[in-house]
Length: 146
Image (cartoon, rainbow, N blue to C red; front, side, top):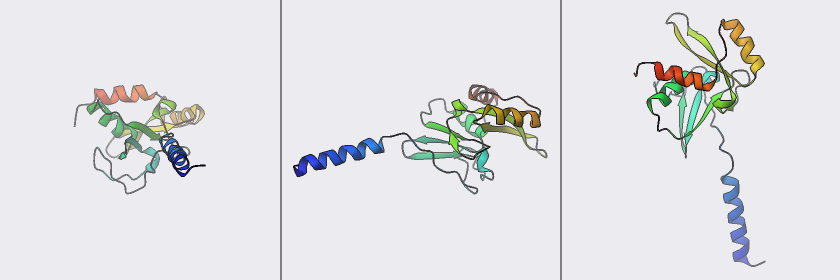
């Protein structure tokens, strides 16, 4: 095989592998929320938007939804964390359970679940009903801009 052809084939293989599916970046305790600048204390509630090589991490899915409502032209790939497993997933595949995040302040947010069974169990415990990502976005749009 000629060296030029071998190099071209190798380069094509590398490009094909690098253009594969987009992988989420881990969110860790101590990371800072892109929108509200608060410290992420519970990564199982976190979300992120990946736009090219730029990763925006969010403290909660509700905080990320508010950012998306305020920035409708955002074109990045969105991920939320499955509360049961801690793995990232696309929000369209999740069920969101409204929860009381902080009893002292009354702050409310969402937990994302990949499994409908897990979401139903969490919703029963939280005295709420699972909702779809669309509903989370609609609720965020209804909030006054910060």
